[in-house]
Length: 466
Image (cartoon, rainbow, N blue to C red; front, side, top):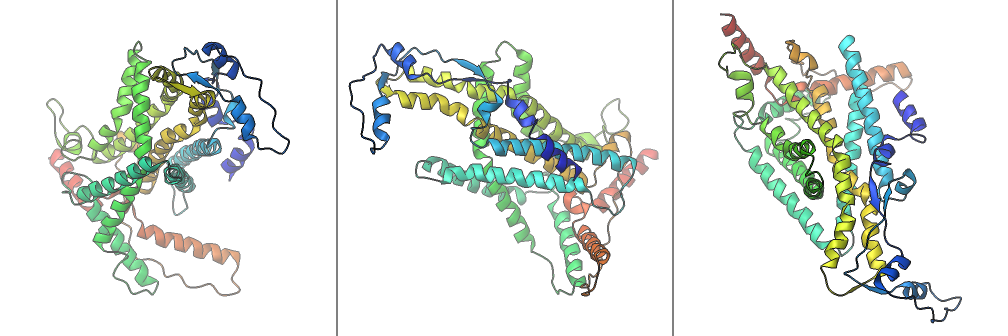
């Protein structure tokens, strides 16, 4: 509540989202009618009569429209992006809310982690989880609204077909991956499903509901594949936009090798994350194999699990730092469009030429959301996995995380009497949360058989001691 109040009071005077784009980017102004007439060597025709009072304004627009050659040698004026310029941009309010709220959620998460490190939590509700869930929900809603733009109107037929094709392709690939061997891809769906099914069955039985479980294994995997298909369709155009901006950004940093290296690392970084979940490539070499000159493995299994989360956070931070360079490469599309226009023959109207230049800046916040929203979704999903999976940042110091295998026996919640007070209501609400916590255990979020893993770790430790 404190951070929500701070966000409400401060956002009107200072906004990180507004500061991030203001005075850090330069935009190109569209040429005026007088400039176009001067460069084309034309004169404005003033001999036409004025329209009647009740006539539509379309006649005035037609009078101000004229044709110019496409091969005009135009030099666009450059101006810094000011806060007042961004208010009129499409999706500006969504961009400002997402970034400012994500920053507050990140502050709440860091403060909560420090607090729980100093004072370990018992059976209290972690508020940082609620903030992270809200950010993930806002990010998913924005991705849905951006994708829905391609399903409105009759002009976006190609984009609509591409979204549907990408969704079905990712759904098909997810079905293939879900039937892959668990010894190769470390998804851990079998222990996750077993834990969730057993805990949910016990919870339903204690509530007086006779059920063998919430869903079969086939429906469990089918739901995951459907979710992957939706995410794939949401990420289609953000991925294409990132590829285009990366290609353009490399052209403007040819004399800056360090920045060029960072851009390449940022572009191929998702491959590193994927490889961290391939057992023969990552876990085997980091936690099991002993290298020459090193008496033990490079890191413990808990440290390796934490490293995967840290890698996601580092990659998100790198991409966030490179965001101004990517966005500036997008704004540089305006003069590039004019250069491509000069290669064409014929004429173009002044209105169409001005729209072509102004449209680049008008969709700046849309492009920013396409770049930023997947980052926020990945970042706070990783933070949720860290908290709900009960990972420890202290695993690098050799402190192994001790996960309690929570007994799935839930407390049966009886309905409150009519005269129950607020204290009894809060107690019953706490009991309900405790019961749900026993259903959604860290084994489900980690997708690991912790009992088997702890046995293996104990065996390896005994061998090292011997």
